[in-house]
Image (cartoon, rainbow, N blue to C red; front, top):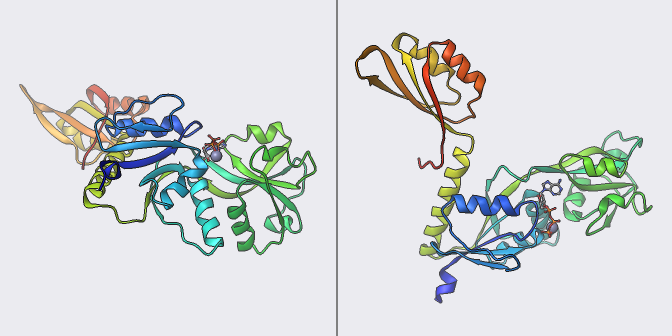
Length: 300
Ligand code: ATP
Ligand code: ZN
């Protein structure tokens, strides 16, 4: 096997809403790479990992065709590919591993402002413009609706004004684009966020070991995102109350304090964000010397 074939290839969006978050996530997993602006390829310097920077729509296909071993893309794009292949009688050859908690949006149907919409049946005999043909077709089938799907690769939101469609089916996060085009959201088709996918093909043992390592680190990064390390002093008598106030804490460490019988130090990892209100409540329950630190990495 050539050395290049032993390196793990990860497909990421080259330039767009998912790019910075995807690169940041991999950097937090310990991957060091140099990125030049127009290059399609980043060479991992400290791990046998290379990044392929492509259009987000191409990511599921690259993983399904074994060109890449892993990929980070929106669930909307992953699901579209899966359904497109299923509708062609084929099976996508990738598995979805984790949701990554960024790139949140939804695929939704929008109508011109003031239109009457009383549920999916209102879509009967209408024309709906979208870039997500397979997902929309599936949605219409599930609801037993006959409608015409008008494929547009971009600028879907202007289709109603151009008289090309009655509705659109497109991605929405804040709704500002819809508002600017006098459209209003009437129906969610799917919720989406970035996900990591892995090829269904069996990898060599060495490659799989690295993939497992990366996925374990990724899991560690995701787990600590909101986590904080809290240290405080507490009167022994108030310990139960104080521990109960720590958000999402699992079995805190209680340490005796030198020269003090009635006070202990409490150290705990809180799996949720710790707000000022929580600290004030802890203080109210008798805690003192409160310290909240960010958690960078965690390995179970
Ligand atoms: P390219 O195809 O060149 O990679 P794009 O224009 O298709 O880029 P972006 O607009 O960067 O892609 O969106 C990438 C992904 O970001 C979407 O597929 C979706 O998962 C997610 N996303 C989050 N919020 C939104 C939103 N408001 N509009 C569009 N996509 C969003
Ligand atoms: Zn795209």
